[in-house]
Image (cartoon, rainbow, N blue to C red):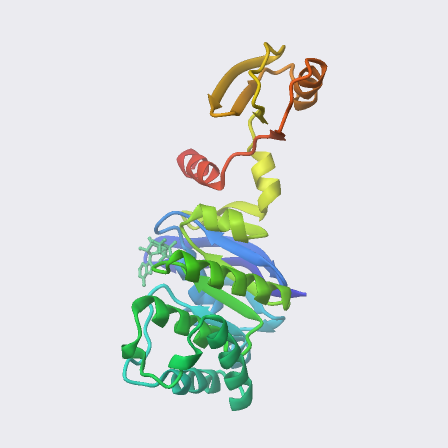
Length: 296
Ligand SMILES: Nc1ncnc2c1ncn2[C@@H]1O[C@H](COP(=O)(O)OP(=O)(O)OP(=O)(O)O)[C@@H](O)[C@H]1O
């Protein structure tokens, strides 16, 4: 089932089309990245999905519904600018915010308790928000985002400010939510997070779609003709290899037009080189991002 269907959506501010006829779909049970350089139109797109601002053209469906109160309640949104009522107690905040989104108190409490336990914050549940550290407050805001059991979860830079342990906990929790069939949209500038977490991505630049599809397909699409070889033995001269970059026992071999990964592997096997790793080199998403922005 589609969690989001955006068709030919535009937004104009003054003379400028900040979102220019973009279309994409997000499936349930996937983590979907929304990426793009500063000012590309990501937040504007998210705000239109949340019905905070109206599009000037196009159509948006959330969980099969046109925008309205119903669609809003299907969404959990963690904005980049965090903000909770600092004087309120944690559990009261979570239950109050979930009730605004139409959730029953019992649902909100049981989901909140499970997550607070997971994050090691259960014992703090009756404290005031102001008594927590910044990172703890951020985890509470995540609990607030998902306590009403939304089908679509939109997360804007969710890991900013978290230590490595809490980052790992939150990543695992997000993956668990995907396992439960939730659709998750991750908007971030950290390409390593996208590479690690996301199934598919949409990249916007100057209001327009520049990349869209499965992460691995996109990486394959941008690959240069190179392979990575790990071996403790020195590599022999290999026909078709036009350049080698080596570090420790790992080498990146650039292949000429006539060579293929298979022809290189066959030569290594014939020369009885003990190979520990052999793989076709794919560019990092970071490299692809920079390449796409430069080109456009
Ligand atoms: N309320 C507004 N009035 C006029 N222009 C706006 C408004 N909101 C956003 N813009 C412009 O729309 C463009 C897209 O902004 P948007 O906030 O969607 O970008 P973004 O991709 O989220 O960027 P960032 O990564 O920096 O957060 C920018 O040029 C911005 O200046």
